Every structure is written in C-alpha cells, then in structure tokens.
Image (cartoon, rainbow, N blue to C red):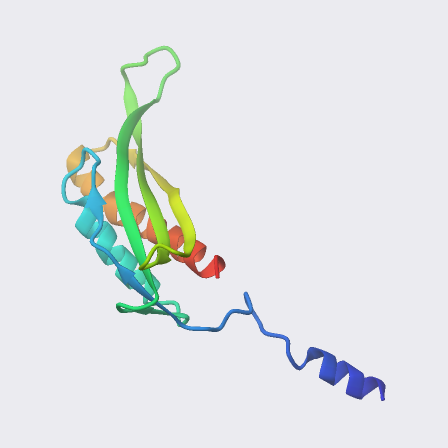
Length: 155
C-alpha cells in the first residue's frame, strides 16, 4: 500500500520548471541606441543561437514577440597603480540591453523594459579595438543567455 501511494504521489512530478509547453517567440530586429555600431547584429545572432538551444522555444511568428534594444556600451579604465590614475592596464566593458516579452497584441506581458547587463575585462596588451571586437560576441551571448533564462522562467 505504501509503495502504491509513493508511486502515485510522484507520477506527476516534472523535472525543471514544470512548464513543458512549447512557446513560439518571434524575435523582432534588435535596435541599437548605444555608441557602438554593429552590435545589434551580433546580439541578434546570439539571441537566435541561444534561444534555439531550448527545446521549449520555437523561433517563429506566433504567440509572443521579443523586443530588444541595446541601450548602453561603456569602456572604463581599470588602473594598475593606485598612485597613477592615467596608467590603465585593463578596461571594463559593459553592454546593456532593455527587453520586453509579451503577446503580439500587448494584452499579456511576460516582462517589460527589463534591463540585462553583461561585463568583461579587456587587457590593454595590444590593439584595444581588436580586443574589443573579440569580446563583444561574448557579451552578446551572455545577455542572450540571461534573456533566454528570463523568458523560460517567466512561464
């Protein structure tokens, strides 16, 4: 009798968030109001790649739309020496984006104007602009993962 109760009690348990319904999300073109040109294409590709890894999401027109705007990009020097503020050995770069996920008719909003931020450290060892171009895809992927987790978690 105890085994029967135990088995029947656990039969409806689902691993994960419990929501196995597949959502159809349309990613609208990423807008860029930051000071760095071309980053919107990098983030758009990172979103497609990252959201495609979750089996609960289909990227196609349907239930909901994801609106993303890159709102900020900063590069701040991190000094090596406490006595010389002009001697920068590293730079902290930060990328931020604001997102809204909701139904196409705007009647149901999963989250609105939510800010996602990614940060990385660059070493000033050579061509800073080349190093910066290499770190931007990492920042975009980090933001895309945050957006995916918020999108899946909000259901």
